[in-house]
Image 1 (cartoon, rainbow, N blue to C red):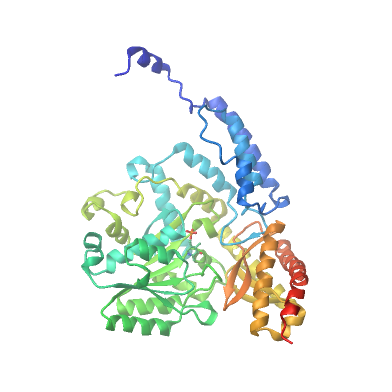
Image 2: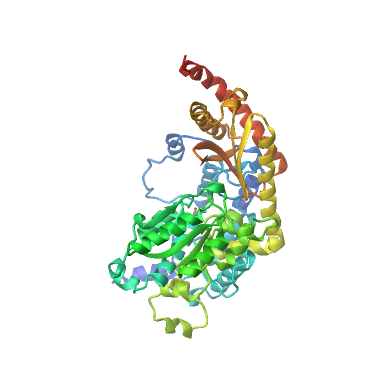
Amino acid sequence: MPSSLRLEQLRSREAPLEMGSEEFRALGHALVDRIAEFMGSIRSRRVTPAERPEAVRAILGAAETLPEQGTGAEQLLHRAADLLFDHSLLNGHPRFCGYITSSPAPVGVLAELLAAAVNANVGGWKLAPMASEIEAQVVRWIAEFIGYGAGCGGLLVSGGNMANLTCFLAARAALAGWDIRKDGLAGGPRLCVYASTETHTWIQKAADIAGLGTDSIRWLPATAGQRLDLSALRTQYRRDLDDGHRPFLVVGSAGTVSTGAVDPLGELSAFCREHTLWFHVDGAYGAFAAAAAGAPEDLGSLSLADSIAVDPHKWLYAPLEAGCALVREPGALLRAFSYHPPYYNFEVDAVNYFDLGPQNSRGFRALKIWLAFQQAGAAGYRKMIGDDIDLAKHLYSLAEAHPELEALTHNLSITTLRYVPPELRASLGAEQTEAYLNELNQRLLALLESSGEAFASNAIIDGRYALRFCIVNFRTSTADVEAMPQLVLRLGREVHEELKPARAADEPG
Ligand SMILES: *Cc1c(COP(=O)(O)O)cnc(C)c1O
C-alpha cells in the first residue's frame, strides 16, 4: 500500500519519458530537418559504407551496458541520426538495385510518425476504429490495383514471408479435409504442396511452421525461362495420389525473387480447379506489375487465385514493414485463424483483425500505404512501376550490345548479366571457362559493393553466377542505369587482370 505522501507526490507526476509539447515540437522539427537533409544529399552518399561487423560494433559501442541514468532526448536523437545516416545501406539511393527492397516513399516516412503518435492497436475495431477502416480500404485498393476480386478478404502483415504463411495456413484449414486446427496432422494422410524450385524460401518455413515438414514440398523443375514445368506437376500429382497422400496446394510465383519470372498462372489455376486444389500466388515482388502497361500476360490471371501474397514494402515503395495477404473468399481467413465461432463475427459489421491472422495486437501499417496510394494515384503507381520495368529493359539491351557483357535474363524489373573478358567469348559454356567466370563475377560483385558507387545482388542462372539488378526504385534514372555497365566493365577488367595469371598457370599443357 503506497503511503499517502507517495500518492500526494504522484498528483503531479513526473515521468522520465514524458515530453512537453514545446520540447516535442523543437526536437521533432530538428529531427525532420536532419531527415530532409539526409534525403536531399542521398545521391552524393555512398550506397553502402561496406563496413565489417567489428567496425560497426565499435562505432556503436556495442559492449556498453544498459545505462542506469537517463540522457536528454535531443542528444540521443542526434546521435541516432548520425549512426544511421552514416552506417546504413541506403536503399533509398538512386543506384541501389539489390535484392527487392525499395526506396521508401517520403510520405510513408511521415506516416510512420503519425501512426506512432496515435498508436492505434489495429487488432480490434473498437481499439482502432478509423485505423481499422483505413486498413480495410487499403486492402480493397491493393486488390483493385492488381485486378483481384472486389469481394476478397485480406489483411496487412509484416512482409511477404508472413503474407505467404498466412495464405498457406488458410489453404491448410480449407482443404486438409479434416479439422486440422483441432486434430493436427495426426488427423489424416500426408498433405502435399507443389511449387517450382525457383520459389522463395518462405515455403520451407511455412511447411515447417504449419507442421507439414519440408518433405511435403514437391519441388517442380523450372525449365524454360525459369517457369514452373506443368507436365512435372501433373506427373507428381498422380504419383502422390497413388501413394495415398493428399495434395492440397499449388503455389505459383508472380515474379520469382531471383529473376522475376512469372509462372503459367492461368494453366496452374485450371489444374487446381480441375482437381479441387488451393491455388496460391506468391506475388510478393511482381503482382503489382499487373497494373502496368506491357505486363506479362500471365499476370492477367491473378484474379483466378484462391489467395495472393503481395508486398507493399516492395513495389508500392512503402517503408518497411508491410506485406498483404489476400484471399478470394473472406471467410477463409476467419476459418483459419479465429477462435470465435463464425456467427460471432458475422454479427458485428466491422472487421476485427486479430480474427484474420496470427497477430493479436497490431500496428497501423496501413497508413503509409493509404497516403502513398493517394499521393501518387493509381496512374502515378502504374507510371512508377512501368518506368522501373523500362529501365531494367534498357539495362538488358545495353548489356546485350556490349561485347564484354553477357545479358542473361530480363523479367519485370530484374535484369541479370555478367562480365565476360573478350578472349573468353569463344569458349562460353566450356567447364573451365564457366568456373573462371563464376569466380570473376563473384569477386566483381564484392568489389562493386565495397566501391559504394552502386549496389546489386546476385543470381545463379543455370549454374552461371550473375550480377542481378532489380529496380524497385522511383529515384533511379536513365543515367543511373547507364552507369551500371560502365562500372561492371571497369571492375570486371580489374578483377580479370588480377585473376588472369593464376588462370594461365592452371591451364593444361
Ligand atoms: C521478397 C519476397 C518474399 C519475402 O518477402 P519479405 O517481405 O522479405 O518477407 C517472398 N516471395 C517473393 C517472390 C519475394 O520477392
